[in-house]
Image (cartoon, rainbow, N blue to C red; front, side, top):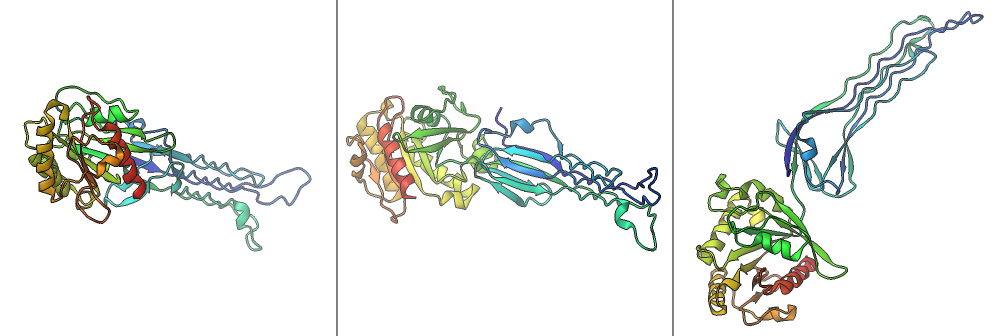
Length: 358
């Protein structure tokens, strides 16, 4: 089960009560007060663990609490400190204040360990209150209470390349072809209903992470379809790959324009992210038709066909475009087919080169 948002109440432990006691032993006529201090309450920590990839282990839980400190004991024995609570979350998790919506923590790196709530201090025993005027104090401090916080945990996956496109344009097929991910692939829309991550190997020493999210449809930014719910998972991506289906009933320029508009309506920052264009499923049409559709896209984005993709081994019977840094527009545009393996390796190589330049 993929869970990317949960609401929790987190509580640190209460400090233990100080002890009020007196030393009473035979042959010790002046024993005096000897009550020990209460133990400190447990803290609440967040720990980032890459071995977890969803928040599903919090499903059904509403309140997580650290242990209270133990009361102090006679003979000046301090109470035991309460055990801290360690909340394990996957990389990319944000801790949001439920009441204000403020992002309190942004946990992105594996191994990060952050103290979130501090436990209450233990109360002092009566031994601390002895004085020349009060040699038999009976007072001991109560422990200080812990801290409670209502939070929402939101997971935003961390990836290098995010796949964006209409439903059933080949996103799942591509990520299953180039990476170790195994999403459901079928010939109907919305086969992908949860985000998927895959590690794409460029060679023996280099790789990058690709994210596939459910298809975006027109009106997604207003809540239609599934894609808008998961667009947050590509907010952290370095590059977006807009996938335009050459065999779809929608015109290619309409697909591209609709995707860009939905991204802009969701987040201007996300829409301004570097992007590339992949014309998918070109095996379902002729090469001339694929080149015609690619030319329509290039005309729309205002760039000229550029056959600079041959250095990556691209099939040059297809029109392509390789941009240069600082030019604006797409990083590149390429025709691909995951089923027929058209330009798949060149796609991986050029994406890898883009990752190295950033």
